[in-house]
Length: 509
Image (tube, rainbow, N blue to C red; front, side):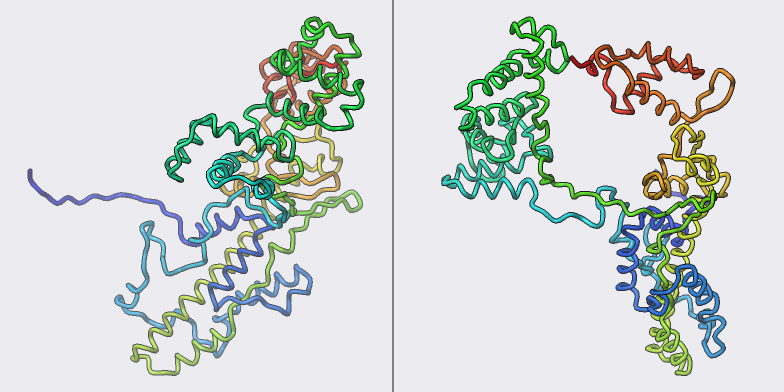
């Protein structure tokens, strides 16, 4: 094996630290931008909030902040431009570069703020979680240590809907590895039956059938119903339906159930009423799930003023940030000191780094504002008819590329804005990606938005006779009769996207 040297030439394209930071900032909605700015203020002492502008007009604040940036160090006659400090190669090497070629010392807390978590929203609603609710009830029981640990393991294995979807053997394995306990499945099941008696009713069920049966049997166990046989009869029949005809029930084959149990039309209606009144997701019954309740804070507001649209950006997106006067002053003071002194050079290097970071961050916030407004204005122009009327059928076909071409932005940049930003209109609040859709050609050759087709499809299903709901073939015929050139499989696809079941499952007695 011989070793040799070779010379290769490669062309690489890398994003600058500013571009990376802008992409990350674009993902952050208004609800979190304040926290992001707060983190940067805590990290970089050279960055400050201009308190004089906080209570002023947002547009005035933006202009003054822009002037501050333009003037800053460069236009101050007494200030010494940072670039005038000549640093040697040895001093420049003090900047640490990471594996991607970015300056590691340039920190804007992005290391602590990775990809945007869509599930994390601000503000959140403070309340007991499902786990805490069940543990409170468990603490009231007189169980020995081993049984308590089994119960704790079961409760910890429940999902957000309150179901136990793990096999009992898997729970036994967990107890063996984590707790050093060797238990049989029957021991776990006996504790599971105890937990299934907790509130809310139906909790810790292993499937939907068991969940609904637990709730029905809880109703049957109440003292009131034991005194009123008439009230018990529909519940007893409902139990029979779920125990013996669950598959027919889920498929809405009510005629088969009615024939098997010899039920009248009135009886089957009352039985179905009892079942559909139950909660299929008891874990989320009172908002005690693991997920916090979401509150949407719009990034944009669009109002109609004398027939014209007015767009405003949420003021949270325009924080009046400036570079610290104290840091500017320190640069001037150190400039007067002996330049050959190592301590002086290190101080200048540190200050320069902090000022650069602050300047970059302010520029990124400004670029973020401009990008948001540029993107929203393009969407507003393209979908003007919808924003003036609120009529979904007025939405035009629009894809990311359309907006990217109008704004001269990259498609990925438009995607980042559309996927995480909301706009408040006079007809409701929408996620920006709601306005994007593919096109469909009508018989006349006109291109219409698939949103329009979905809206009409939803109207057709809403207006149908629920005793004889429209099949996908019939829906296709009606849409084609309205001039929409659409296939049956596309109708089925749109119906599923609208979370509408097939005709058989929409049928009512």
